[in-house]
Image (cartoon, rainbow, N blue to C red; front, top):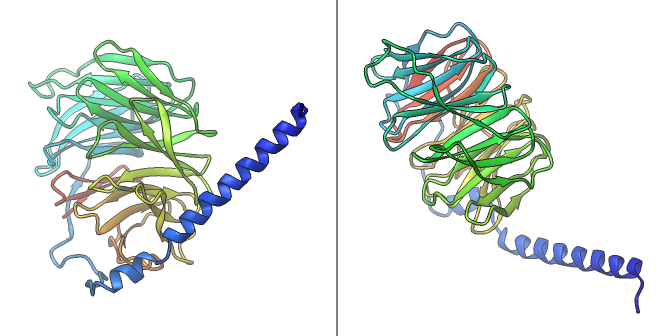
Length: 355
């Protein structure tokens, strides 16, 4: 009978062989680049924004660094979170502040708007909690108190996103993601396969049982909420992944990393299909978001800039840069549901809407 050491060694060899087979299959599928495929279709190259696109609104009201923003499902309302200890609900069209919510902890890192009815917002940060607020329909007369504080993470809350009105997913510096019941405050499921801080997550736009997470361990994982396990692990980045965003049709996702690149991964071929970077861009990416069609990937950078990349291009040169985007780090950005506006937030305490 083989000894335990021999059996372990045999298992290692089998694992190495299986990995080699997987790499070989992936290599066969990666027979062309995205630029070669799109070039055969004679698609028009994008080298500048649409002629009417410009800065339309500047939202002034925060007195500290803006760390996060998120559009509501109506494509006009948005929420922002700042180091000044406030959540502000804005009308992005009129620039009016609909509500200002004082937070117990000013060290907020994320915020989220519930997409179906728009009556709930959530936030979290270094307090390790996800705080849920029910918005006051009467407006700013009285500041709402947290209707629920979700407590189970052992590290800071890096990102939160509503799955639906009754459930929310959170990611944390404790290397886990948790799915919560908003009504009871109970943790339904914990997703714990990352080996470093989880910095971002995004819910699939076509299947609410699927979400993607990006981590300091330089991997992005696709999770199935029903099983509580990851079904895909995507590698390629050389440093922390700070942001993830699903492609509009749900079959791919984009990532932004401290390695100065954005990447696009496809779930169907289980592989990276494009890489966006330039030799002169040396800083990290804080946030990414796709346009409504998916043709453009917007990214916010530590060097105060925001760039747009052509997802069907070669990836070695951006399409265009937002002119004089901000005077400090671009910490967050997002495209609204209609796809007709992009909002950027920055450490310069401003939010700007481009359309």
